[in-house]
Amino acid sequence: MPGTQTRSRPRDRNNVLNRPEFMSLNQPVRRETSAGEGRAGAARRTATRRPSQQDDAQDCMQLNPSFRGIAINSLLAIDISLSRRLGVCVGARGPGAPLRPMVALLAFSGHALPWLCGTLLCLWRSNSLAGQEVLVNLLLALLLDLMTVAGVQKLVQRRGPWDAPPGFLDRVALDVYSFPAAHASRAVMVSRFLLNHLVLAVPLRILLYLWAFLVGVSRVLLGKHHLSDVGCGFALGFLHFSLVESVWLDSAACQALLAIGSLHWAPLV
Image 1 (cartoon, rainbow, N blue to C red):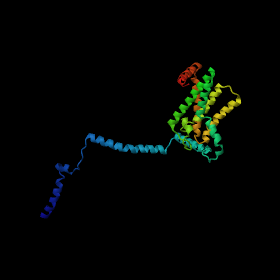
Image 2 (cartoon, rainbow, N blue to C red; image 1 turned 60 degrees about the vertical axis):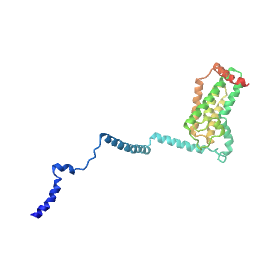
Image 3 (tube, rainbow, N blue to C red; image 1 turned 90 degrees about the horizontal axis):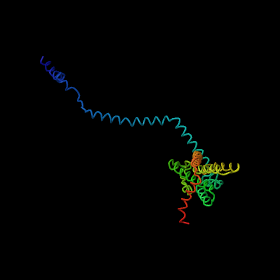
Image 4 (cartoon, rainbow, N blue to C red; image 1 turned 180 degrees about the vertical axis):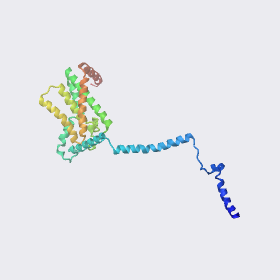
């Protein structure tokens, strides 16, 4: 009996903690958090989950590109490939090296410098009001084409297919980047302008269209522009011609502009 009593005493001591008044001592300690801390922790957990969700969305977009993106990338790849293959006059050792001087001369015929200087010279030598009216509007069209193409090139900043640095004449004409092709735009605008205001025979009209087309092609052969650059340059030239024709200055406005210009040059003569 004494042995059984001594063995039951430790059991009783252990069972003391099971009494109702001591039940709270057996519960694990819970950390009390305020409502503000709970909201802050939830915000932190949400913030940690957001980057991973954004990354997953970007991965899904990259793995599942749209049909439009695939089509645009494919067309750009074809454009770059064809433009590099057509650049046969790039460098002195290319397959089209013997034709390079003639191609460069053809491209120079669409440069802004000879057209601006030629228009100013003809305007200085002209004595008729009708001729001065046409030449003043042509000069404004050339300036519009020059500034518009330079602004778009500065905005897009697309390099050529061979990434060749621009030459001195290109920098003078603000033709630094590839898109759009300034020579192509100027050639189309000038050809449409001359065809609309000069009476030319049919062979000359055909030659003028052919010249505008070959000027754009020459820039591709020299590796200065992509095919898409030349195509957009042609479209921009048509747009410039339409704009100049819609805001055509009459003879009185042209004479007023010439009078203003002569005031700046009179003290120097």
